[in-house]
Image 1 (spheres, rainbow, N blue to C red):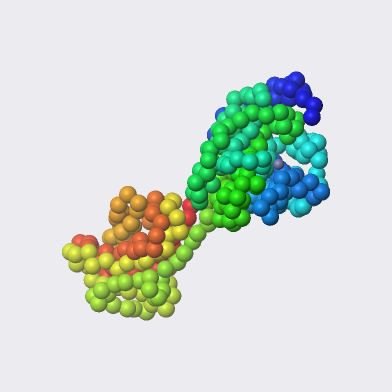
Image 2 (tube, rainbow, N blue to C red):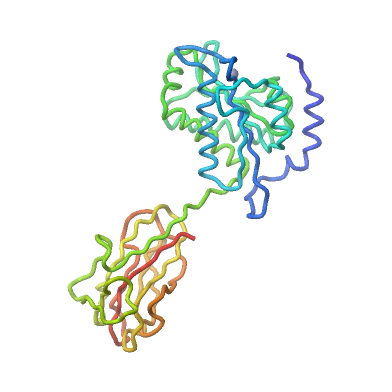
Length: 353
Ligand SMILES: [Zn+2]
């Protein structure tokens, strides 16, 4: 194959201003990063074959998973692929398509052959800071992904005069994911969990290089005093339907006392993060003016007092808090106050922010 190192150097120099910008967090208004993923071979070109496997099918399997993981896990990213089916696509079509799209990075996925074992990855013969940085991120993360499932030999970060590395105008890396003609490697390539771990490693390498922010999972839940299995209070807490400002069928009340004897709302926090905590109570003149509410945060309990004699029948914010993942008693209403009047436990709402 012919070599065009001068062309590639010129193209990279033209893009140097953008390529050397540090890839820190993506502000909300910024354009999405463009990731081009290239599953090697396809259609009439099966790539390497061995042990009942075809390279073109494995590269497509891994590449589609890289795309899906990127889009599901991170924000601020667009993905384009050279093929999403068993289609014949020339090398020139792949690099022309990526260049025309204006991809920020190009990742080509292949399976090795020729006798050997393990993982290796490639950049072009000459390099620049951005390509070197991408190569480091892709190699270490892909390898770590695979090693989460099985022992894999590290064959190192290499350079080669491959078409897709030479003719692309953005940082480009090609990964060779084990040897199709080595039985031990082929057995791993037949393991769905291994391919997913490999894809996850590729996605993490891409996200690390581009500084993609993780998507926050939206979450909001309401726990009422009547929610099965999610509310506990001692027998000192009575049940009332007195105020129509109640949430749900009824609410719980107790006399203030200089002991906690808290009523607890149990919340299944999906993952560690920042959550807004709100409470609902009927507001009745004579109810407690300084009811302690306890929020269990990842750095310890925080107490917020609420005047329950007024402002009832609506969600009232206790604030936003860092909370740990898990299903636990997260919000409590304590009886421990010197203010007079019933303390009320009715409902809480916890929302990821
Ligand atoms: Zn290949």
